[in-house]
Amino acid sequence: MTITLRAAGAKHAGLIREVNEDDFFVKVVQSSEEEPVGLFIVADGIGGHMGGEFASEWAVETIREELKNLFIPTDPRKTVKLDAAEIEAMVSGRSAPTRRLGETEVERMIRRAVERANEVVLGIARAKPAEAADTGSTVTLAVIQGLTAYVANVGDSRTYLFHNEELTPITTDHSVVASLVAAGQIQPEDVYTHPQRNIIYRSLGAKADVEVDLFRQELQPGDQLLLCSDGLWEMVRDPQIAKILEKAPDPQTACERLVRAANDNGGEDNIAVVVVWVESK
Image 1 (spheres, helix red, strand yellow):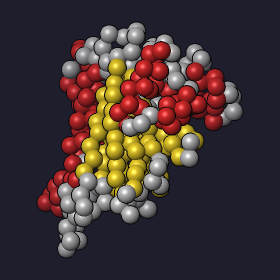
Image 2: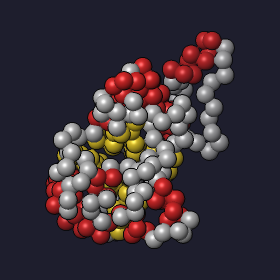
Image 3: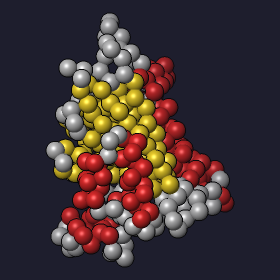
Image 4: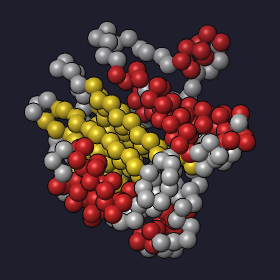
């Protein structure tokens, strides 16, 4: 059995805002010798006179660059590859970045990539306070190797698993309303109407250290991953999202239909979506 990945993305400013501050990235490398490798990112920019548009672009570009080595063919001699931080540490004699217990190499790379994106967004905001005050970004990303997905998020952009016609969030929102739901103080459906629904407590560029949530999800042929900004999930409820994913003939059509549904339901925010199909042949 050969595993293949098909993926697409789409974004739209919505019907209210003039500038789209959301961004996405899709890359899949497939060869006959190795498992497919895919990198998928969605980022939702936040504020600033320069606009969250730039923050989301910086975040996506930084993560893409930091994770480019994922697409280098495996060395059959099992040579250990060091990242730039580890090489610098060896040369300078400093301690190398800590590897958390139980983290795989891929997860460590993802964590470092998101931390680096945080440094970039924060650094630019501090360098140009007049134009970039309060600039930040959410991010969710997935790296798929074969039938394993490594997922990360900061903020309230989400990654979902669509399996056997059921849509399940993999990530957890870093928002006030999500915390209230977890504490049993409001009902899950209240997140769409609560007056504090747009307040997040974790984002790229907010402070020097960022806490990154990591998840590992085993996949099966026929599964789909959906990555999206809150401009989708706040406008389109999960049952409607699931129906669109179920009916779409391909990932690109799914993305276009999801964006259209968000706008049909009000289009109150920018929208970015990525849909990934896991297939076998």
